[in-house]
Structures are given as C-alpha cells and as structure tokens.
Length: 357
Image 1: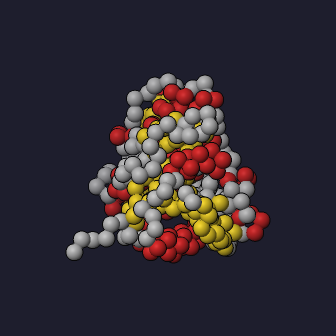
Image 2 (image 1 turned 90 degrees about the vertical axis):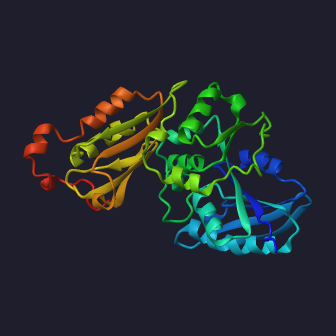
Image 3 (image 1 turned 45 degrees about the horizontal axis):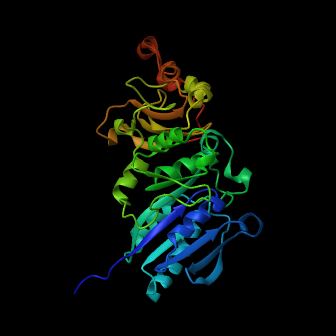
C-alpha cells in the first residue's frame, strides 16, 4: 500500500506584512489554503491573531495567547494543531504559512519536520525591502523598540532577525527593487549571506517576477548546516559591487580585555559575522561569536577537547564597503603577543564577559 502523499508547505517570512501581501497573493491558487498570523495586537493584548483563507475567501479566524515566556515557542505549540486540523479536511493540495513579522523560519521549519510527517516543507520564502535592507542589517535597534518583540524575553535586534530570515530562505523576494539605486549590490549581499537562496525581484506593484512557492527547493539538512555552521571557507563568496566576505583565522588566543575594547571597531562596516573564538582566560572553552549590525554576542559552545580541532579562532564577516585589511588588523591586535604567550598567566586576565556567558 502506497504511503499517503505529503502536503507541501510554503513558509513565508519577512518584516513587512505590506510588502509580503502581493507575494502571498501570488502563492494562493485554487489548491492552496493559507494560515496568516499577525502580531498587531501582541503588545497591547498579548495575542497573535490568525486567519485561514483560500482563493474563495475567509474560512476561519482566531487568536493565540502569548504569555511572558517564549512567544515563538508558544506560537509553534499553538500552530501545530491548527495545521493538523486543516490537513485532515483534505480540501487542499498546498499550505502556505505566513508567519508573524518577528518570527524566524528555522524554529518553525524544524518543528514541522520533527512533528508533522503529513507535511513536507517545500519552500521557505523571505521578503526583503530593497530600500531598507542595508539599514536593517546594519543597525542596533531592538525589535522591542519597534514594538515587534515576540514577548518580554525577546531581546533580538532588527539586524539579527533580518539576517537569520535571509540565511534560512530558499527564495528571497527583493521588493521595492525599482526604488533602489543599487539592486545588483543587494543581490550580491543576499547571496553572500545565503548562497543557497534564489533572488527574485518584485515589480513596482510588489508582484514577484519568479516562482516563490512549491519550488521543491527546501533541503532541511542543507538549511540546518548553513544556519548552524559558524565559520567555514565555503561561506566565502566572490567580492563584487561593494560586498565582501572575509575569513579570519588565528592559532593564537584573544586577549579578553582587548577584544571587549575593540568590539565597536570589529563590527564597524560588518552586517553579519559568525565564528568560534578562543579566549586566553578560558583556554579550554570554545566560544561562539556572532554579530548582526552593531550588536555582537558571545556564548559557550562546549570544550575544545570535545572536538577534533585544536583551539583556534575562526570568523567569517560580511559587509558592504568593508575594508578586509582594516578588519583583519583590528582582530590581529586583539590576539596575545608572542611575549604574552610566553610569559603571561592567562587565567589571571580580567574577564569583561563574566556573567555574560
């Protein structure tokens, strides 16, 4: 007996629901059902509103309550039964899930793959604004400052969300491309952040010029590898039109105080960087490095002894107008000198990151 056919699901993400609407319209044909979730009432009433509709019109609507915990977790927990009920009706051959603006695709796709065998995640589509893209990737504004946080614990910034949405997408729709003086540069930037993605321009009305749903492009293993791999040579893309990605490595550890003092200089001109660093005062620990816009964060990844690698620093950084020589010089200046390597009591160094991770 043949196994039941899985229902393909397209996941739509992006900060602007206005720019997403023409893309959502292009996805919705007679065989498609849409679940659209918005967060307009999240700050005021603590709810995420959802609507279900197909090409014939509205079908159902309701709200998910979000408490003081992880809003993204509560959204996933509430969505799964709703999705299951729609699939059981058997009326449609394709599902579109339009996530709230502040939702990343990765946790949603991971939950669907892990818990809903009747669904096949087919395409992850991200809509970005050509006019605001570089600004959104370069700043330090928190989602909470824009009223977009998914609950009180959400301390992400706009740059972090934008980068993560792009990095997981099979298709990036470049809306407002006609209003940008540098569309080719934006194409390059998107491909530097995610070489897996297909960039599709939208016309002046916001309608995408290419296929944005049911592409069959989603590959869970590849998507997870790209989102999870912190720094590797395969992240390097050819520089062009002002967009550069730099790989920096060192077999010497970083001086924690000099690194902390240099954070602003390191992220200057960098829209996104990820890597693993070795701090001299924490010689056994693998430390995760991540930056988006003007914000950088460090966290524990485990012990060096748990890996096949000797302790080292590896960082990949992407920027618009980035000076690779300057960045490498700033990072090199944070390393222990040869004299310090020979004479310094590493673990006696001040730790400006104490209590952070």
